[in-house]
Length: 322
Image (cartoon, rainbow, N blue to C red; front, top):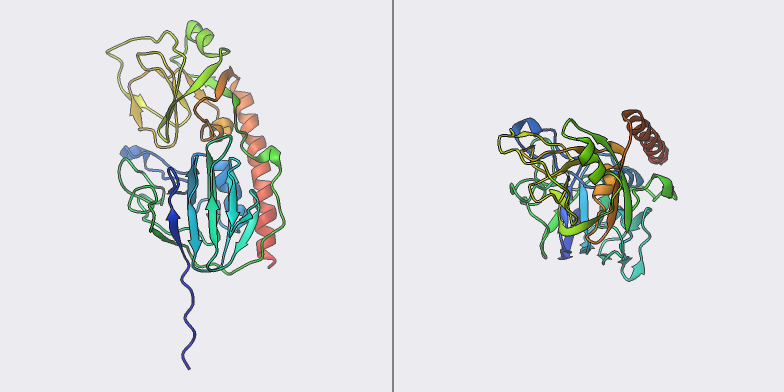
């Protein structure tokens, strides 16, 4: 007698949301001029994957401002972490920051968020997708990675990797380890050789507003500061977290899809521990830069890593025991 057909590990996109893309931990190909990419809120990505028993680097969906509606064709274990999106599973409210079992045929409907900007939807087994330079992260401008190098569309079908079904852990990551969201942010920064005393006075302390020009490449701020102008300035390497000053003086904060080189002065860089907050900057939010010593930046990163790794280790032990 033939074995009954097994449902495929797939979900169907009923509604794509505003800008929903496959993202993971990003790629290490910046020497080739390729942006690193990856989920803009790395903390949400790590905790989301840990909650469903995935390695921290595997791919899920990054949601922006308005989420998708997804019908699952097979049982799955999912988690939604990040900004406080409203979500339901077959009409029942879906808790955030928890692993939730999904049955074949159920529909996950994610709506908007009243604060913050992005969330990460993890699926046990990790989403499949086009792998380029060692990552499945979608790079929409280059048109590669993820699903055909683009945001999701209605009718798309995504599959995920094989992983034994497991019960959902009861764990709920502490709010202290999650990425804070607006409407006001204090971003700790380090100086670069481009910082002058005059620029520090204009940048560190005053309140800036996040402009509507905000995407995965960068976030522009509304208020202008006196920007140095040097037409002979060479192009220099960029990294996410840099604060660029274009000629109009309106600062730009660089995010994971930023280019690898640029010719604008970059007097500040957001410390690594605060960079996940850049992914939650929402137009209209306000922020202030706070200059800190390198020792403070290192201490903040160590404390953040310790908290994240404790959560990841506890969840890894849960899945190892089932």
